[in-house]
Length: 345
Length: 242
Image: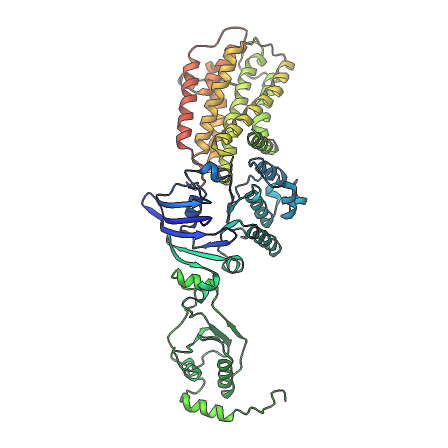
């Protein structure tokens, strides 16, 4: 049995369908990241799992309990960190953590928890006197004080400085090691890529993908690319032809003087590119290679455009570099290539 | 029991740390009592302190059980405090109990401050315990119900503004400071339908030497207590977004 099981969940508010037949699972000892744009249905789903909302239809199970019906049993076993904190600004750090500990029959040692969170020195401060990152850590402490089997963390690292992020990441790693099922939401896809064992992507109330980060980023593997800087206005069609043809290595000028080659950055490709540029005596700016990021996978899966189109059709080239017949050109370049050339000379 | 007491302590700590709530719950009643006793501007017969004290005690109840509770709960709701507590083992029942306990503690604190001041200013009450306690009970429930009705539906800022406006209006209209018979007759008759007026009259009846509690205050207080509680239970939203 999975720690969290969602099957056919539908949440309707009047005429608005917030969640539509959603199914996924999350395991104990795993960090599961729920991704989705604003309004995708993340909050409704998580609040249904916390038992705060009654599902319109579908089945939910959290460590074996039906969240809404078995609310009293459930709340002893879950910890919730809200995005908005849910903490009165006038309350002191030590006060609210101790009070929350008193709500649970088997709470952790408060002094130890505060120490682990790096909050010991801030006990006498009121919540409003804390920085954004410190406030997130207090909210996290409240979620963990009751030794939860499932932790629901809503945007745990939003507005947190790099040092605070380290603390929060370490604590999430500890939870995972202790066998806690961690379900977290974030808009920071790089953060999700870093900490998630599994990712669940929700779009318009339904599941669009779930799996490990690797599984998601390698799906539909159009992600590999090589980017380079060169003078604007290159004949991209010619370069693409030289690099192996539009189908295998499409070249587009994605911004002024910034080019993208839609192909895996093999040494051969880089060699051919630099050779072509050298032939026309063109300068080369930075060259970057990378695989597809979770962000790109997310944007593709949720049907978004990232602002820079992934593949543009060849643009009519401004005649800067002469467009030569590619096969002949390649031959000539290969002929002039001398492997004994001393590059350091 | 431990969760209830822990939550009550936090509720009290937050209120007592908050300057505005201290001003409303202690500053205004003490100021009113002392100022109008020492400065003879009120159109009262006899000793001003004998007229003022029952009204000021009712005013103190209004400030704590209505204004302060409404404002604090409104902000709790908007900060998501209520939502967070909804996913802890505290539960709604114990949260309401904690707020009630905190309110009753504050009322006792107010009485402990105001009564000695009034006695020092020359107040000599003639206490009828039973009607006094019933009036305190019904008055507290009416004010709390009204507070929860506002805080459970309106945004924090609108709750704050509305609670303050209602507080000041009731202060003026309920015979707490200005005697009812000095108000225009339409106002003074409408005013008798208010829970704050009924409470003030009940306090006068059970604390003044002359007279007793007029029977008409009981149905008024009972109806407000039942009505606001029923409405608040139905209208209250725990979540700030709904």
